[in-house]
Image (spheres, rainbow, N blue to C red):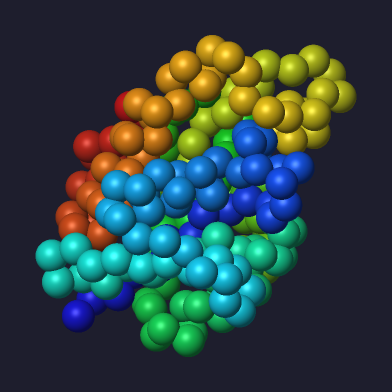
Length: 188
């Protein structure tokens, strides 16, 4: 049976729960609702799993905080013997307009501390990532407040539809692979 690891980046704690930086956790929560599974707290994160068409999917919300996300990813990848090409990292991206989806097989960390740590731990930039646009609607010096800020009313109004699309992306990655998923969902 093919195994996959879907890692949603975020920070633990109630104060971060509804922030833009936690979109990775939010996507995995939506996936848990769509696939009817729940998370349990295990080593280095909250873990849940489901099966789809002969494939086993492990979902991870690291409890290491954003800046140490690589430690949790590597631990679960090795523990479950999941190849790197079957790993997908979900993260926020200020360089994309709100709700825009961008899937890539490699690339820079774009200044994202979670991706920087994953890159450091894995020793390279060749890992699949799923970026969710949170926009750059902030003035000079306002990046941290924007990223760690709560979703505004306009964003929340579109959130359910965007999360539904995100669950489709993850399922497509597992069933159809990266290239077809990129072709179908990039910039939607």
